[in-house]
Length: 86
Image 1 (cartoon, rainbow, N blue to C red):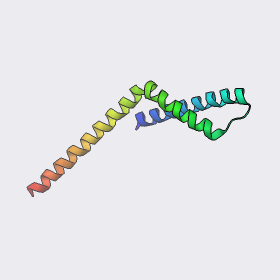
Image 2 (image 1 turned 120 degrees about the vertical axis):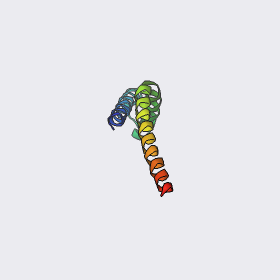
Image 3 (image 1 turned 180 degrees about the horizontal axis):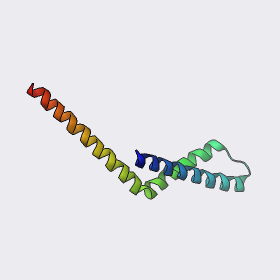
Image 4 (image 1 turned 30 degrees about the vertical axis):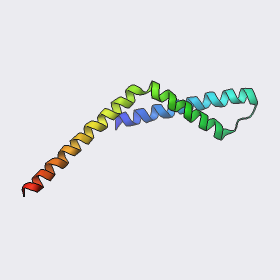
């Protein structure tokens, strides 16, 4: 769970940073900002940035999920085999 929260916090941080940059640049150029569009653009930018910048964290989290799923699957198969024996 720790890796999940780290990855989520980093994604949120990237979004906030992208939003601040988009909002600031748009406000400096236009003087007013449609917040919905700033959120959409920041979401797209942070998504692309996280794809590149957070690859290590994402891989670590995916490995933990895969390991955990494998353990659950092993327990399920063992219980199923035991049930078939009875």
